[in-house]
Image (cartoon, rainbow, N blue to C red):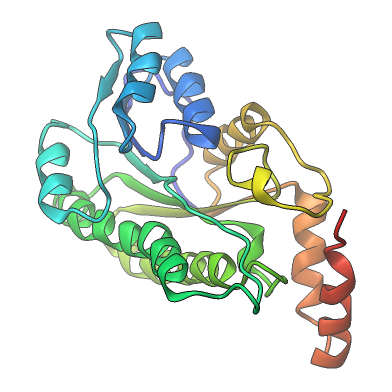
Length: 253
């Protein structure tokens, strides 16, 4: 179990990928709960829209997650840190007939390399101060291989594995690690899908689930619970059944 966050008042939170979707919704929720939120993404103008609502509590730190020097510079501007959440993500539906190295590299860079770059800068300070929390937003797509989601799902599975490894190691230093696995959320990324998305929710509802997860001190913040349980259940079957279920799971519109 992680330390339970019962109150967000005056906590210093760094959100990477805060310009839209879940990141933006979570930023606004945390600011409304009294947190000091540091907002990062490449889209500075969108971050400034949030800062205009909460000019005192929101700080804009423009960031390219592939630039290690810039990550270190921006992190140095945060005097004290309680929680870092990596929300940056990229996604394109990739079928075997549209598979191309350029798009694959782009998705891997944002979803996985960016997360490890942030970790390499953030973890040393968290370990030295013997407190703090690092969290990654993955996806229930990381539980099983879904059609047209091969690279995206693979990066999210890697994030789940990374968080599990970090959790075990970081406990001895008093540092908390968590993984956030949403189902389908209405964002610019899911708008690219051409299949039915069961239990799809707004970013605001997703943000509420995340806040509840931190309040309970969960390592894995997963929602919607029933849908995610179904994904995990599929993994228990032998592959002939498993793959048949996956084939029927994602139905094109």
